[in-house]
Structure formats: C-alpha cells, structure tokens
Image (cartoon, rainbow, N blue to C red; front, side):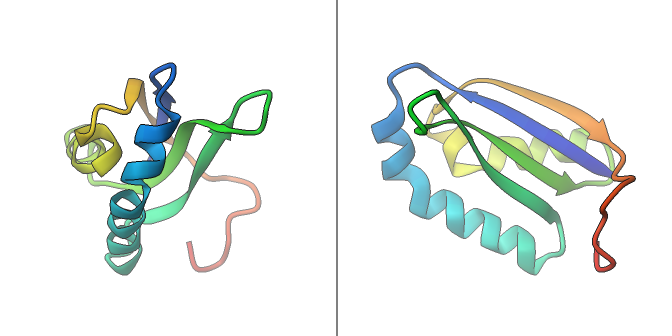
Length: 98
C-alpha cells in the first residue's frame, strides 16, 4: 500500500536540512533499491527554498509507514515540525513500473 509522508520543517531549519541532506538522499536511494519509494521531493516556500517534504512510500500497513518515516535521517535529526502519514491510492498517471 502507498503512504504519503507529508512533512513540514521547523522554522529556521534550512541549514539543518542542508547538513542532513546527504544522509537523507542515501536513505531514499536505499528505498529505491528495495522498491519502496514511489517518488519524493521538497515543498518550497515563497522564496523557493525547501520547507518540507512529500515522500511517497510503499509499506505493508500504517505501522510500517510510521517506522520508515521515523528512520529517515531528516526525522532523526529533528528537522520536522510535523509529519502526517496518509494512505494514498495512485489512480491517474501512474507509471507502468509503479
């Protein structure tokens, strides 16, 4: 099942995001290798700077999605003010490989 991780950064945390990005990218690369990442990217503020993340993952259930969300280096570093996890159904424009 797909889950959307809708993450909002804490205010003033752009440097923490930049410092933690290599570990976060490596984490996502691992999810790609495991076939567990559908897509991901940052939300942007009015100035075009990252201020959150949308990460679409494959997990067996909500507990699995919560575990993956908690394992993200951004989450471990305390970057996020909030993380909302929602089940999601990909209906339109779904790539054939997804």
